[in-house]
Image (cartoon, rainbow, N blue to C red; front, side, top):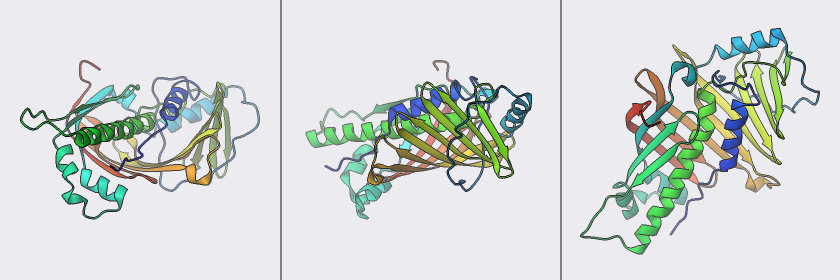
Length: 298
């Protein structure tokens, strides 16, 4: 049985969310940045954070106004039925073009999967296999379903941890207090430290977010986002996440490429199709439908 190595460092997403909601802004709302190609990496400034600057506060407010914010729009949660493309997953993971005939695909297609997306964290996944009294599953099928459930949960919950801060408004701080903000002809850099976690945000001179980098306990995550224009501001529609564990060799670096196509439900933007390619693992494609927003139990 091939075991797919879809494993996201849960602490990494949690650190990103926590830092965005406290250190880089101490705020419940403001939005994320936009653009296409990523800028070259920059070393974090070494100087101590400057005192709060009214001009920097004004600049931050202007930057925040450019981007879509689910918090300002009023989106708290959503629920969708998830349809993974199991054929492409097995084909990409096993480099096997004959995966369409794989009997595991037929079995997996009988599972009902529901994503409970929570914009403030704590997203979960329901995994409900079809019940058959006449033909109980053999041990290999039970084991395979358990492995694929773990892989799917890890992938989608990891996506929610990484995606949410870029759309809920918490990427751009609302105050410059405790941050070092530098401006130059090439662009703008925000740098902050909270409880040993370093965050560096790099914007180009058009105030478009090029990189969002997190370092904690020797590990680092480098995000390179891109955005689409909407009537409510710039909305992240793809990103590359480069995850470097503590003490990792070049072969231990994991890279994730994500594309998001949105659907509008109740006037809110939520994912409708996710395309995720993960180094040394495979490609996961998800369609999301039957969605509701702000369910009463969120």
